[in-house]
Length: 598
Ligand code: ADP
Ligand code: ZN
Image (cartoon, rainbow, N blue to C red; front, side, top):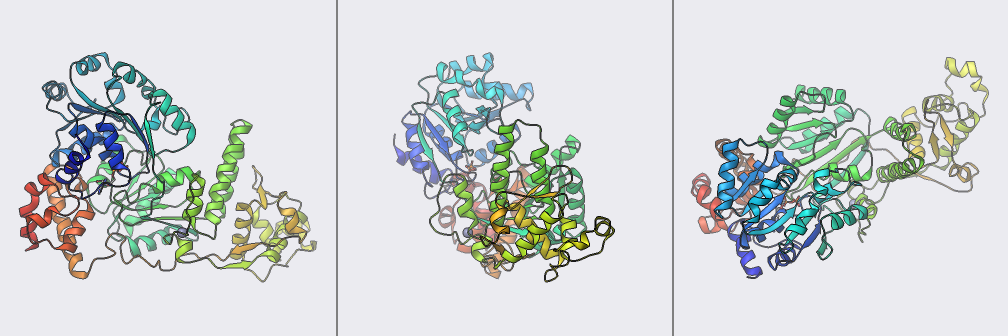
C-alpha cells in the first residue's frame, strides 16, 4: 500500500487535487504503521492527516477529541463525503450507542470519534480489544499538558493506550506550539519514537490590522459595512455588559449579531452558537469564553474591541478567522484605557513574583506588537520563534505604512510634567498641565506654577493621549496600581536628559483603504456575474443544509461554490475537478448544480 492509494482517496472521496504541506509525508508514515506528532496551525489541514490513513488501513481509526459538541458535525461531513464515520459520546441515547457498537464489531466503521473518558472505560477497551484498529489519533493533544491553556485530566490517562496497543500507529495533533507543552505531549502519550512534523505558524490568508480607539462601536460598524457586509464574524469584548450592548447596537444597525458569554442561560448560548454555525452571515459578539473548538471554516473576520491578554491569546483568537484558507480580516481597536488596565491587571493579580514577571513580559510583547511600525506578521512569527524574511504585504503596516514623527520634544515635555507633578497623577492631569488648564485640581495643587504648565499647546488633548499611550506601551512610563499614577522608568532617563530621540506614530483612527479587498473578503476576485451565481449557489446550499440539518459548510465550503461560479463547469466531469467535490457529493448534488448553472 503506498501514497498513491492515499492520493486517490484524497481525490475521489474528498475531492481535493493535491496534498498540502506535509500531509503526504504524515499520511505515509501512518500508513506504514509509524507514530507521528504534528504541530500545525489552525486551518493547516490536520484532519486529513489521520482520516485518510484510517480509510486506507484495515480496521477502524479511533479519533480522540475533547470537543463532543463538534463530533456530530465532523461525522456528518464525513458521511456526506461517503466515509463510514461514527461517533460515540454522552449525547447519544442507549439505542444509538448500541447501533454504533454493532457497526464497530461488524467492521463497518472506518473512523470513530470518541471522548477520552469513553475510550478509557473498561467496557470500551474490551470492545476494541477484539477488533482491528487502524490507528489512534489524539486531536487537541495539548490537552494533556498542565502547562497548556486547556488541561484536561482525562487526557493524561491516555498514556495507557500506547501500552495496551503498542503496535497500532498513533498520531498526536495540536495547534499549540510551545516547547514545554510539546515535551509533555510526547512523554504522556509515549511518542518518543514518533516522527515530528512542525509546520510554520504563519496564516498568510489572514490580514492583521490594529487601530486606535476613538468610538470603537462606530469604527467596528464602519469596518463591517465596508468589508464584511454579509459575512460571518466574531467580535470579542472584555465584559459581559459590553457583549450585550455591542450585539444590540449592531442589530439596531441592521446586522444579525448574537451575544455569547458565560452569564447567559445554556439554552441561549447553545442556540446562538448553533445559529452562528448553521446560518450564513451571522456575527457572534462574545467574551473569550467563546471559540474553543469552534470549527467553522468560513469565519471571515475576527474583531477585538479590547486588547487581548497576550500575543498567544491574540494569535489563537484571530486564528479562528479564515480556516478555509480564503482571505480573512482581523481587526483590533485599542486605546489608552486598555493599556493602563492591562498594566494594572498584572500588578493586582496575586500570583507569585515569577508569575508576575512572565505576565509582564507577555503584556509588553503584546503592546510592542500593537505599537510597532513595521510588518506585524514578522513580529508575530518572531514571537513564536520563526523568522519571516520579507515584510508580509498583508498587514496594515505593510499596506499602509504608518507616518512617524520626531516625538522627542513632545516626549520630553510629557516626561518632565510627570516628574514635576511628583509622579503621583494619572494621564488626565498631566495633559491638563501641559495644556495650561486652570482646573480646580491644578489651582489647589499650585500646578499652574510648574515650568511645564501650558507648554504643550501645539498638540490637542487627543494627540497628547496618543503620546502618553505610546510612552506607556514602550515602557518610558510605568503605571501605578491603585490610581493609575504615572512614574518615570529607567528607560525614560536618557530621553529626559536629551541623550536620545524617539519616533512616534501619527494615529490613524480608521484604516485607509486596504489594497487587496473589495467589498467583502470572500468575494475579492469575482465579476458581477460570477458574484450573482455565487449568491444563488449559497442560497441553494442553505436549503440543502437545512434538509440534512447540518451547517452549510458541511455541504460545500465557500471556496467550492466560488470555484463553481468562476470556472462555470459544463458537465459532471468538470464539476468533479473542482476542489471539494468528490464522488459522493457529485452523486448527491452534481445534477442539481448543473441545472442551476443552466
Ligand atoms: P485544522 O484541523 O488543521 O484546523 P482542517 O483539517 O479543518 O484544519 O482543514 C482546514 C481546511 O482545509 C478544511 O476546509 C479542509 O477541507 C481544507 N483542506 C485540508 N487539506 C486540503 C488539501 N490537501 N487541499 C485542499 N483543501 C484542504
Ligand atoms: Zn506585514
